[in-house]
Image (cartoon, rainbow, N blue to C red):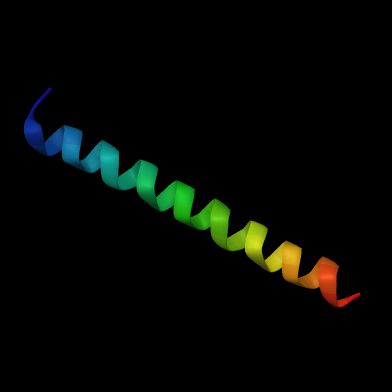
Length: 34
């Protein structure tokens, strides 16, 4: 594996985590409002 491939994999993992956190935040906000 090249350094670029490792960097790309880390970036992809970070994006997935951020997306999950964003959606969970939206769901939590909606749940609290109702």
